[in-house]
Image 1 (tube, helix red, strand yellow):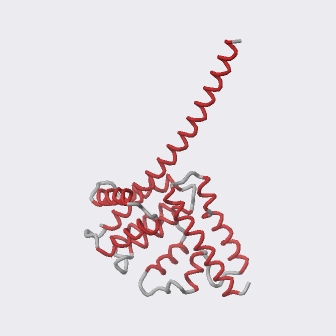
Image 2: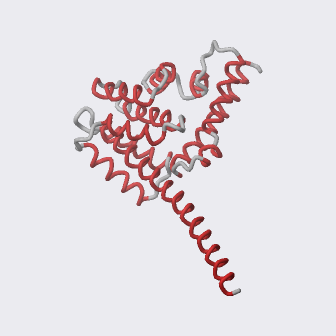
Image 3: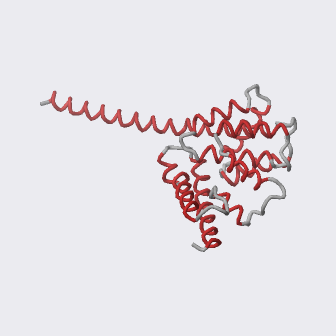
Length: 236
């Protein structure tokens, strides 16, 4: 009887240890993804910021806004991101290498590379028209992240000076990856696809970094607002 009880307890202990190892493994996976997101993101931003040799104040403001407003970093995480940013500016590792690392880590969630490309265009255009050096890095990002031509054109039009205002209907079509001439059915189809890609529950189920969860929620809300605006404008 004692032997039977010992075997039973040993089995429970082994099961408990196995479950704990799985939970720990999942936790470590999330931590690895968060570290990869932090390192590759701010390394790419560092390379983009110094593409012309000097980091402008306007560029630093955009990067700081991203940390504070988009990712809502506390001071500890912000200081860590700044260190990564500064270290990458003068490192021998290329922008393309960081971009490839980022893509390999997050390509299964298509929304993340698209978000990163938007951020890179936003930083690249901080000083106005994109320089030849920054243009080269944007072209690399288009290739590595597999950005479609329409998304590329819409983002450039939005961030360049003289583009449509932030409140214009064109912006809402761009958020939905649609064109004003698209049919109502095409708009609905693209809307449904985007809501699936950016839905916070779907992002959470993939065990992606908490930082991206915040962005995903904001993006999901932006998609909803854009769809409602286009619906009113088109009358459907």
